[in-house]
Length: 278
Image (cartoon, rainbow, N blue to C red):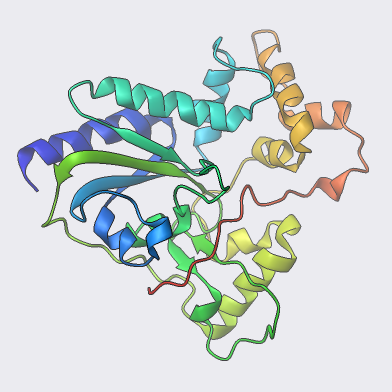
């Protein structure tokens, strides 16, 4: 990798990784090669891009400090606001370089996703995107089965937050890293996809591999809350006087109907499934 490109990658990592994010480079052409034209990115194939993931550490290292700032806006998802704040900081840290950001929730006017985040994570080698086509003679008949990415270290205890594009920076010799196939058996893949599609509330699909770290109890409480209650919970946490912070789990018990949802959480997002190779 040429020195300028290596320096760009170093600066991107230095800006995001201390806050619980992971950064993985890829060529735009790798992504485009797996998708029909409507989903492709309008950049030359060798253009450098990075997929950005959040690890379990992001909750404490990025979200909580963000809540203590004056940046939180009502009626918007707090986690999305936090991620957008860090993406903006990244752009400002590279004033000499054009930096385009596509978040995992960005949509075209026709509601088509601007980025298929799981495909990007797969081609960058960050996480393996398991789909129905990865199961030989699958047992689901005419049921619709959504795919899911599994991280080799965190299993399903992570999220794909977006893609960083560097127009004008081309890396034709960037080494391509294949994602680690950490659920290699047919039985394991069936269990993973069934847990994700039919039992996502119980968290079990996230433990498809033995993770090095899971979401904390506070994170589970936050993501178990109905979306309309999450901002209220975080406001309570933000307004807690200095000293040991009351956990979100305690706040959840105090402010929500305990019968709601059985303490279970939905996946953050389900992405469009597009046939692709591995």
